[in-house]
Length: 319
Image (cartoon, rainbow, N blue to C red; front, side):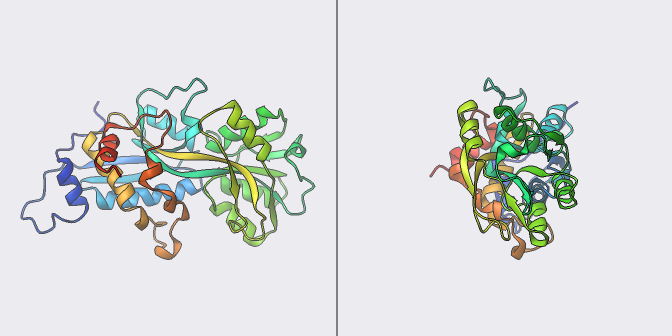
């Protein structure tokens, strides 16, 4: 069964309509209504917020398209839903998409690279843990099942090798468990700042454990998706700048979406990035991650092929 009805709309007409330039025409272009589902992430995660913002903006700008969000465990969960046809769009960290031998799941492609996530290892300020090796044997949240946090944190632990009493909790659940003393530390692969950690730091003193050695290890073991990075001192209240590893995030799409539809979605992501805000919060609460979205880095999806509609958009907007 065809998942997406044919979009009978030329690329130029789609873009004109998206920009409101056809408002004065006597006849709107003929468009079949299409409903898309976008896999996001768990409570307290940037994926949940930016996914909702993207869905709202695409619905507003692309004629005939309505996008709803599907909460998920995050990256790996979104990939599975994409492959199963449960969603047509999904957010994922780059490392979770590419297998160790460089392959990408058949039937998936990328619209673009969005922003970078940073791996956090969070403890309470009075914790006895000062270094990564000291999480050995401790109760540590590895993120929600099927999340990018789980995927990357397990890779980090394997490099150690380090054994922990792993727990599988969402961002919000991890922050609450850390606050209540139910776990000793939490991993979080997410955009900076992330809501769950921001809320925790505003109410209780926390620290971030440096992951510079782990960043170097990932770069060597898995060339491509990882880069050493810094979480700045301005990211979270009372938290010092901390070295860690960064991973790009991509907007994935099923290959069977029509080219013109994906072209219009790609145009919306880049032309209207500055207007993407947290749903219902207005410009004052604009998501800081959207300022990383730009044409120069957007095309850099490593070995993940671009959807033909995205390829056409980047070709038409060469700089």
